Length: 396
Image (cartoon, rainbow, N blue to C red):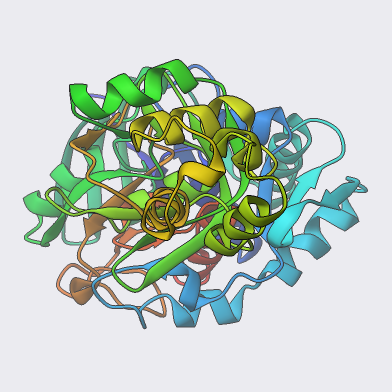
């Protein structure tokens, strides 16, 4: 048998977290190999942000993440911040701009971020092998022996940066969870997150004719959580940033509440219009607040067909509730196929927040989406990738 190649650090997964970890470990003088079963590195970076990569968020902090232990992410996020990553982007002279809510995008292509990471890896001496699968992992006295499709590698530190299950067409798998369970770590049940929600046939019958209509500033809530962003009607249900955000909090059997005109007192506006122009149709006034087809659908669903003068306060209140207190119950989501991230993952109770290492398995680290730390929509998950990758890179 051929002798195994020797590396200080083997990183499985050439995504945002894995590449950042490779850069930092390499800078510390460690010999680093990054492997990925895909044909090219960083495919999620390449397709992100409509091809312009929403690479971080100016407001990123622990409050923007979901986890069974909300405090776990504090260490990594505070030691490698969005400002640190922005400084790296600036050093590479990549121009960027802020969109809404602190979201930062490249002015050009997301490929610039991929090239930046590849360049930093090369400078740090880290090696990359794509189209390379992991076939077996064995713990040894000095670390790990990992059988790859290209041969065997022995390493002192093994970093799992293979992500979650979201977007399987790009090669996403549950590999990280399998490794965790093999070495005795708990896994918080994964589920699709930042994903469009679907509805039962009767509700879908109301939504489908509205496909393509967007409400730019809606408020969508679940329990005490609220997001104020756009909502989009689709052939399959509801999407748009506000829906994707609330999907991370929603659970089967729960309702969500949608406010389509959160800044408008619809009841008072309808009453005032009734006083001034009683012969106007309700949907005509409502179309001054909402897209015309949506206004028509709401009045029809409420069974209101007459003029404003024919409508009592009770009827107008029903319209108001349909606009700003629309309570609906999704029957599911579109699943991992369209989910931007995976909620849940490696239980942080078994990880060291400083190093991202498994407490019970020295030298084994988990970073990025594989871990039970999930960010909001808007660059937060990339920041967790940079921060957790950086933290593991200081220790691996």
